[in-house]
Length: 269
Image (cartoon, rainbow, N blue to C red; front, side):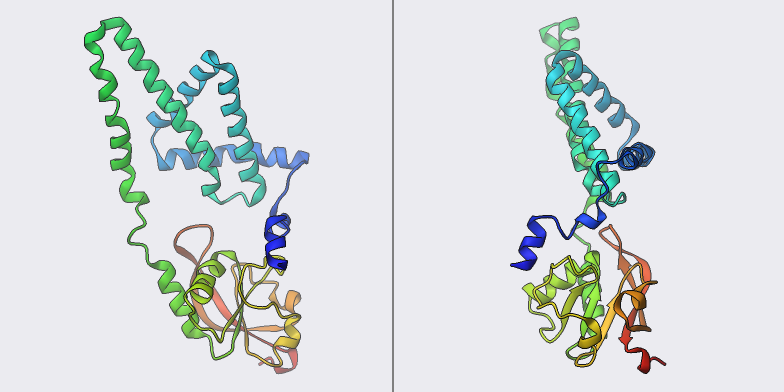
């Protein structure tokens, strides 16, 4: 119940959110070049230009719906920039808005062609169906994740490195695949997983506090991206054991970080 309440109320996310201040507005404005680069990198200029052109047409032809799309786009960028600021999948709403603009631009262009040439040009509307097929085909290779087994390899390697009855303190990106294997598939039932942020109660294991007491009964490990403050936060000394390539906001591991054994100060080498 504690974990459910923390999730539903947003308590576990609140520390990463920065809203309702002038700094948050400045962060959103500063994120625009990053958002633009992201959109251009994953599509092409034609998609972007036609998308914005269609949104502009919508604002002129149906100002309330057009204004709603513009407002939703602004809000989406604002929340993206002021949550963590580097999770591109939080821009999905902006992609949807561009898609709506692209569709409306295509519809408008077809109507103009038919009006100019006459009914015999109605086939142009059917030809527009080729556009989504082209978009799908041109982006399939870069977005297809059917062969991505990085999560399985990562969990196997991490669990293999942990001794019997170990406690692993880790972070969201690593915790989610590890928790799925551990909680849903029953892998390594002797192990306990814990979020580094104690407000993020996202595992199936009872949360034991503090780690300085837990380490007296069980081996404790930590695998984190930001690992410079482990000793300060836990009161335990981190001893490097093994290096892993860990994920950080992407669907694949990308950063090399150490798996640490946490030991009391009087047992540190």
